[in-house]
Length: 70
Image (cartoon, rainbow, N blue to C red; front, side, top):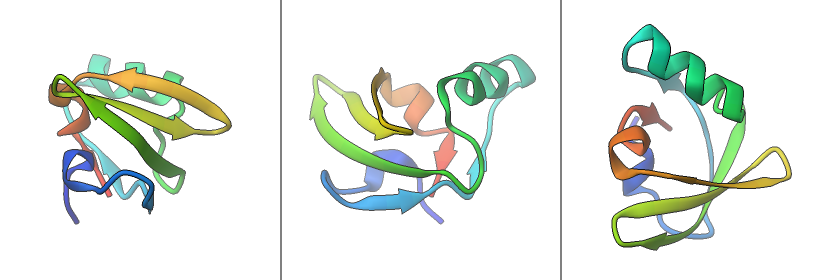
């Protein structure tokens, strides 16, 4: 397992675990970051990641991306 920030752009990955406090996990789950979902990093800009998940593109900060293990 590794954090989402370590994944290369364009490489689909399966979410293994979402860490952090309960509020953080709930926030990420509401965006679609749930265990077993496939996520693809589209690009990285200024430390933030743009990811494709469940037919949507979502921008998340590096601190949030580090809590998502793939």
